[in-house]
Image (tube, rainbow, N blue to C red):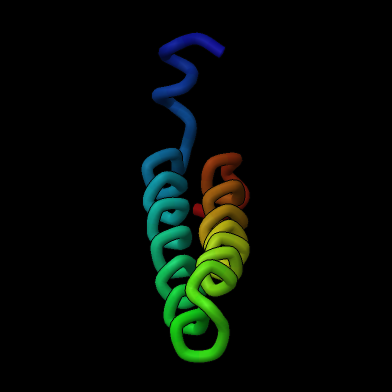
Length: 68
């Protein structure tokens, strides 16, 4: 894909924002759960799993144009 085609992709900036926001919030929630319930490393692992779902799914949908 050329440089011009990459710049024209709809929703690319929203996708990056969703990915960063989702990963950050997922890690925050997982770390908070980990500190209160389990040990912090298990909470961080849970946060990475939550963050990839919370950020990755909407980011992919925005990036490929399924959401506007």
